[in-house]
Image (cartoon, rainbow, N blue to C red; front, top):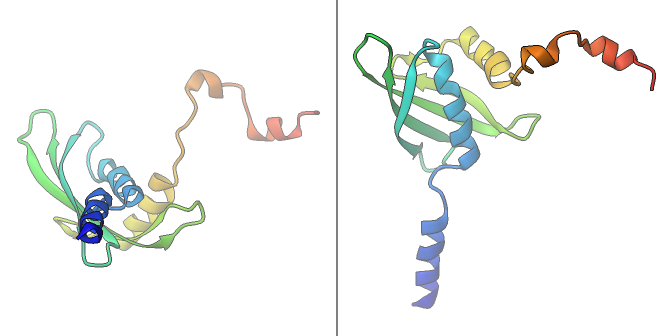
Amino acid sequence: MAAAAAGLTLAACTPLVAPDQLALCREVLPALHDPLTAIRETRHDPVGDERLAVRIDYLVERPGRARTVHYAICHFDGRDARGRPELVDLITERGPFPGIRFVILKRWWLGQSPAPPRSEARGRSGLAEATRPG
């Protein structure tokens, strides 16, 4: 009886969605909409028994427009070179995300690192930094 209770407790503590998969799928959402769009997540759930996909339901609000309901399903398989979940497919309420747009999303949106503020970047060059005498 105690073992069963311990198993239930462990199951209750185990997240239904892998936190790193959920975080990566959340990073995708702004890329699907205009820059002035406000996104409010309403729900997220694992998809399938193997938990290799996550679905996020969300609302979108744009200035001067009615609120709309959307979803994104992110499918994962393994890890990328940085140890993050490897996004292998994206499906929205409009259907599968088109091939070349998916490649661009993965390469330049998800691989993007924040740029330094303009004041920090001014006058700096990676080449100049690399060739500066130590």
